[in-house]
Image (cartoon, rainbow, N blue to C red; front, side, top):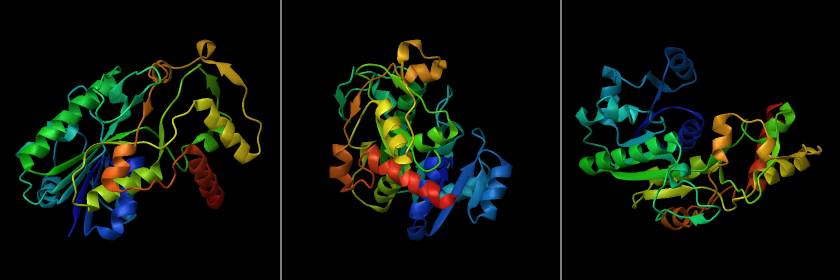
Length: 291
């Protein structure tokens, strides 16, 4: 029987939990506040508080019984929070598989060229440097435990409630144009599908890029979403003159095309939303159903 512990119950982890729930004997999730934990318990989840520094007695017990572990909580300057809190001292005799959610940001900038899992990481931002260090720390932990580790390097995440559809409706969408710039993206439904397949399977995992088939300029995504809504897209705006936060501008400092060939071959996974076109249509339909 699968006993899954999920560290960090955010947007992607929640989608994975909903997907895998019918096949899991027990799921324990963690959040950072008691208020969130209480709300999740009311919704039927076994939720516990993990603030990133101390493992409660209850959480240690759950980890000790876990057969599977999903880690979604991000690292910081002190490293991965679960490992820093002393996970290595917890006896986990039943643990067989670990899924760690990382980022394609670890590859750094490749001036629009293609990268795959064999590409040597060259992280630029502090966030990506921390992610790469956390990947290695989890690999070391998995090796000591004798557990199979899947490191899922995620592209830009979108999905219902978090897409160009909602941005256009809110009047916040922009079409910034930087010649030659492309971004990679992944629909949350494919994060759920692929990670669930990995956790339920028994084959090798390793490093896997979780990204769709079509890296493309960001302004094309906004224009397509506007077409789906029957709206005029916002005017194109040169990147150089746009007012952006330092973090938003930093995303444009990295330009690469990320291959997903390995995850298709290794997991036999067929993407539900192979491009932003299918993904945005699903977001539109989900939003219309919610109205």
